[in-house]
Amino acid sequence: MKFVGLDYHTKSSYVSILGEDNEEIWDGQVKSDFELAEFLECIDNARVLFEAGYGWPRLAKIAEGTGVVLQMCHPEHNRRIARDRRKSDRRDARNLAVYLKTGGYKPAYMPGADIRDERQLIRTHINLTRQLTAVKNQIHSLLAYAGMPKEGFNIFTRKSRQYLETVELPGYTRKVLDASIELLDFLTDLLKRIDDMVAGLNRRDPRARLLKTIPGVGDITARVLLSEIGDIDRFETDKSLSCYAGLTQRQRQSSDSRRMGGITKEGSSHMRWTLVQAAWIAIRLDPALKEFYEKIKAKKNACVAVCAVARKLTVAAWHILKKQIPYKAGRPEAMGKPGVARGKTEAVSG
Image 1: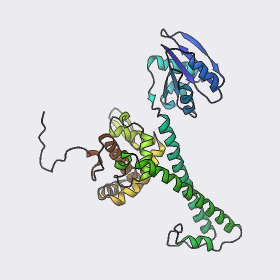
Image 2: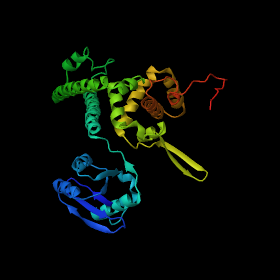
Image 3: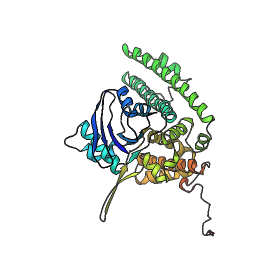
Image 4: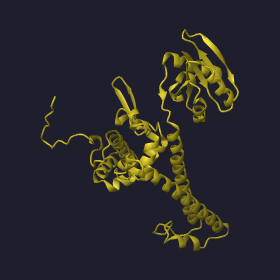
């Protein structure tokens, strides 16, 4: 078995190969993706380790059919490489080869080509939604700049559209508003087309229909969860999925001292942002989540409370996907478990 450390870059890469007895068989630079593909094909009985980064799907495509076992690790987990005072591509590749040989790394999930392709669609929708919000905020800013009174209605509905098109503004402010309206229409139309594609995907996927039983979860949120999670079996518990979404609390503990902070914000930022947006809707639809939200809000604040609700939605999603059951209102963490009435115990058979 050969252990290959690959410091991959889109323009050139550095390779270090170790044998079974830790001797360095070869190290050097590979100039292009074409040369790298030919190089990997020439290595027999090899495992390759590289760090996740920009362009890694291209590397996965290059490695297809070469016969090597490709494995990926997260850069943040490789403290030795990140903190090396003599950091170079050669040393990084050598360290990766050593990690692979000794097992001193935490493997990262590599989704298949179909999931990677779906993620592009969903993440584009999220980015366009953020751009749409920015355009709406710009329009509000233009009206405030021109000293227009704030209307008591939503100016972005069809009925209120005439107000935007006819409101009198000085000089170039009117032209800027017209350009913003044109951009608003373009983004809205583009999002509608993506919405139709996502709805088509969900109609063919029973998992999406189950996820949509969660309050606040629609077609887009369900697809974000499915594409970002990938294989639900890689998460052993609902807490591990919450950690992946970055919705668990930071913790610092030493001896008898323990300090809890805000959420970690690790893992999938797209999944976390979407769940928080869904949480704002969920607290209006589910009385139990509304009560939970108000309780946390009274002790902390609204942002902390809505993140706590988003974590409950994450827990519910794990149980739904793992057990293939619809949403159970009240206690998402108890989904799929037999109910027990208060003051009674349940007999457990051996």
